[in-house]
Image (cartoon, rainbow, N blue to C red; front, top):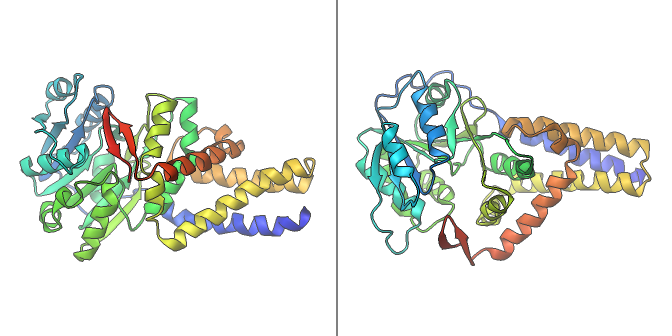
Length: 346
């Protein structure tokens, strides 16, 4: 078993190649004014999440020119809450054939927006203090995206650890995150906007491709200190269904070099605990395992507030990741239920 230690350490070291892709949002120039900014929030049954986002926007020292909430057929108080907070509420028109609810809501919001700079935000995100100014200062044109920092509230949310790491490492710095997009109206319209990706669950991948094809720069960073979110706060079932609906498809669009780096790194992470058990807790293997746990802890803090025990016992979220990834791959192309709608998974 000791002969495997150099291999595992090599795969552990390979993981550090991912570290630059976990760089956080640090504005140092760019825009300082949000007067021309239109914030567009597609929302379906978001009465619990929406107040957090709207309150975070109201607390920013830099305020957007307008906030538009597109009520996507909600059956709760989403529209009422948005109006009470001072947002402009658009009631979505009936969903046309071939569209997803989110892409249709974003399309309508963009059509109604007055600003020359559009910011699309998922309703479960929220800005950190000064986060909007930090995001704008990081923006230097083109299509820009911030991967929200995962605010952990419940123990089960720690199971998202490797999903968040893979999402950020596989997207930044050259892709777009699905939770947030900042782009000039002119460039948005130039690629056809959300109409060009109207049937996609993972519309961010399609938009990134359209922007690149049009010669429009695409850039993204991790969002610690700027933008955060809670993923699937309604329980473990929601977390499972949420990650299942398109994660395998999204991973398949990760650049090949990055994808193989992630795969090999996770293989090394998996060998270490197996070797600890198989070797009867041999001290050298324990040391290798603790080195892996320390690395996971360091990386995880770049993407979320994951508890220390999620890193120390990282094989649990790692096995969960493998199991759910397989489930997502098997259900790709099949119908799944999401937010009360039956959709075909990407």
